Length: 284
Image 1 (cartoon, rainbow, N blue to C red):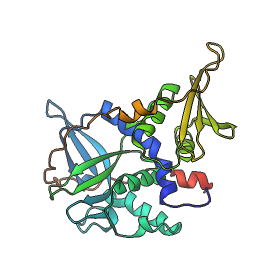
Image 2: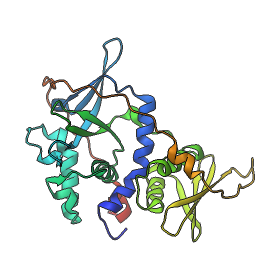
Image 3: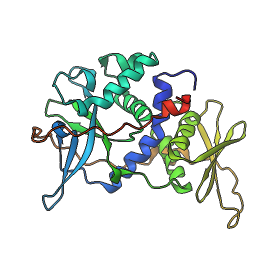
Image 4: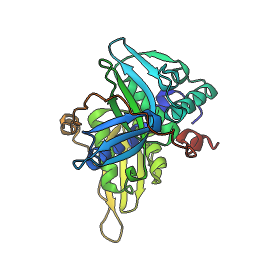
């Protein structure tokens, strides 16, 4: 990875982001929540009134009303350092690698821009779950990274890898599928090897998945193999792209307007940040 730009970083975070959002939707109730910047937390309330706090980091805000994206590190609301530290870290890496989208305080809001930026941020920080929160200010939404041990992903398996691939076919999310799948394997601790010019093989705990690409680097076929002791290799087959592309993705529950945050507790102590994908790929 010699050329580091927004497109490369967005591809690097795209597949694990989709996997983690699907996992989040199936494991966490996000219908009753509030944001507490003072403690850098997304606070979830259960049916009995009990609260569970997920550590949250403000990435930025998207405002369709004025057509802009504003990075968290530039937000004028005077948030505590712990709430914007990850966005500041991304800004600093953007300066180091001369990525203007990560260092410009406000960007023109285009279709898909928040998703691309957040995918890139996930690749840089290693935090791969997020929540989009209403702010109470018109249509403005805050994009938050979530960091909690209970949100960890299950071990990667053939079935999960197939889900990642079909989700990518259904909703895009990456410009270069081969680059995105390679990054997913590295982030998830899966083996990946090139077995032909246009075929990669993912080596997973319960078997392997072979993926064929077209000339543009996009996924064009799949074939899975179970462990050699239980089954022979299956041929690569063409994916049913039409059915995948038209399969509706689960709709997230509608987000209520966020209540005014409660400022009750001192800011949380910052944990050591994890080494992001960019540094691992560059060996730094």
